[in-house]
Image 1 (cartoon, chains in turn yellow, brown):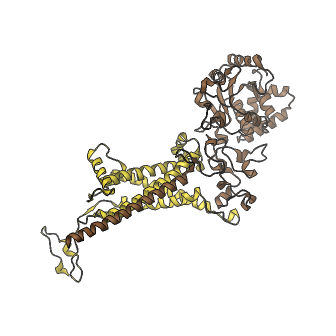
Image 2: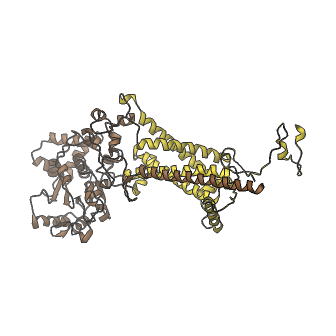
Image 3: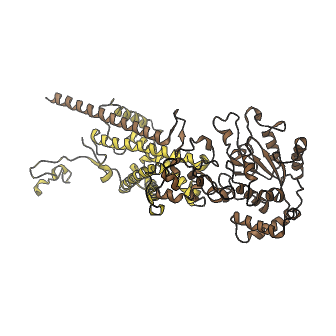
Length: 247
Length: 363
């Protein structure tokens, strides 16, 4: 098979020629860019898993499972559900913070979800283009190495802002059980200056959860759709870190 | 009602209370405040040496449930609080004087004990129409409140009315009933919320102030930490059933008879800061949850406007329809889901159509 590898014009082996199966069918070499560095990918999947756990357990805290039989001392159903919720919440908080820190260290793609370049005219023009693309008014998709402008807007609000809101209200609610001398209350107790009755904080925390449910649905749908329609890898990029363009 | 220059101890002895009983009272008070072993003698010393604190007790828009609760205090007995510990110079509901005689006491106290007296306010002032919804002694209550607050050392806001607004401030609040801390902003205010507050909490706060000559440590919301730093839920005797996942699902079901957790029946214990589950009511006999009914959250801000007392989640009225967060969230998530599915379907059809076009072009 060694003879299948022919050097390209620049002296490096031609990728398209390297990969070839026994029947001689040639693979196609495609332009690939390294976008998502390892910490970004790890944070993505840890956060995704934590959010899933938080949604399920959070819903079950608000609307608990049917009563279990037996003595109270033999059961700890709510206890375990709440433990899972609090544990996942702290994991999410730690990895969300890590992700913010990485934005200072990592490549420029790692900063994308933390801001919207509102001052740039071109950005809004391209947002409009993306909206037209999703409204079936554009025939050809544009390709982006990182997030497209609409996706960047959605990630900033749907993920960064919503998750930050959930972490803040979540820790405020958690501080109620930890007591007013806890660091959680010292750091997040100010939430109760905005909503003096914690019943309201519960209500907002619930609404935040449903906003995230909606975000997750759109996020997954857009990732799958763009993977197919925009001729670029999206889903596998979050595993390998590389974005591949197919045309 | 007595001069304010006498010490507590002399008043107590004048009433025929033995020194032994006096020390018993000091120990009991120290215990009920959760203070250390030395506190009993410090309380005794303070009561023997300090002049009694003059207290002006005023009533705005209220139902007098705070007074009703206060007069049922067991530890300390309210007679000790009113007759011995403080010098209750004015309380239009229970004082002997009436009319101009009574009103004259206000001016007198203001002049004589400038910056020394405690202003205890039960209820709140309505601000709408210049305050005419609560006229007290021929003047709007809000004017009387502002006048007496000017020279007070501190203000005690008794109950949910004075602390948060309570039922008269519930939406749409036609009289614009306003809690004390929104009207008086330049004086230290202790909120003692509850509808009514627990009797022992009320006398406990009074005892603390008269004993130590300062206000108790307050939390972020201005409530004394010693009684309001934990939720009903944190110290509830039914908490093990909550952690186990054992709930009353319906009134009078088997779980209700077994005394399971009332969380699903809308108990507001998890969001209510008060001492009911530790101090309890009527001399420690019982409290709402112990009698089988959930907490209604009466010591919390705006508890009348948080939907039914029997729902876990608050109903949200901003959306035009009364739904709770989960119902709204599920509907929104469903709508997004449907939109995603429809978008996917259109995408698939378009793609199929364009592929066919390509095939047509190529052939």
